[in-house]
Image (cartoon, rainbow, N blue to C red):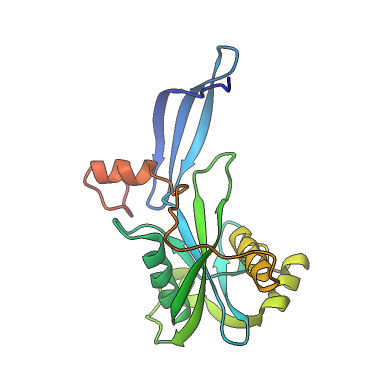
Amino acid sequence: MPHNFTVTHSELLVDAPILALRRDTVTMPGGGVAKREIVEHLGAVAVVALDEGNRIALVTQYRHSVKRRLQELPAGILDVAGESELDCAKRELYEEAGLEASDWSVLVDLVTSPGFAEEAVRVFCARDLTVVDRPDAEDEEADMTLEWVALDEARSRVFAGEITNAIAVAGVLAAAAVADGVASPRSTAEPFDLRPTSMAERRKANGSDLKKPS
C-alpha cells in the first residue's frame, strides 16, 4: 500500500500579498516525520493568443527575481475571489495585451515548482482576436512591451534559450504541437483540479481580500 503522507502540524511563517510560506510536519514511510517548507500561492493563468497568421502575442516584462526582462505569455494570478480561470485569462489578455478573443480552449496545465511551491498554472489558447484599448499599466507592467511572433519562430526561441519563462515554454510548445496536429486542445469546461486553495481559503475564512495577508 502506498504511504499516506499525513500533516501532523502546520505553522505559517510568512504571509505576504501574493504568496505565503508555511512549514508542515509530515509523516514519512518508516514511522518518522519530516518538516517541509511550502510556498503557498493562489494559482495563475496564461494565454497563448494566436492571430489569423498563426502569430503568437508575446510580452516582454522585467522580472526582479532574475534581474532581467523575459519574453512571456500574457498571464496573471487568480487573485479575485470567485473568478473562474477562464474569466481571469480574459481579464489578463485584455490588461496586458489589449486583446479580446471569441474562441477559447485549454492547452496545458502545469505545476511550476512542485518541490516547494503550490503554484499551478492553466495555459489557455485564444483565437478569433479583436484589438481593444489596453488600460493604463502600473509598476513593471508600465515597462511591458508586446510583440507578435510567428509560432514557429517562438518555438525556435525556446530551443535557442531566448524564451526561458517556464510557463511560456510550456505554452509555446503545446501550441506548436496542436498546430502540428500531434495534440488537441481541451475544453475550458474541464475542471482545474490543480488550482491551489490553501492561501485563498485561509484569507476568505479570515474575511481578508485575496490580495492581502490575513
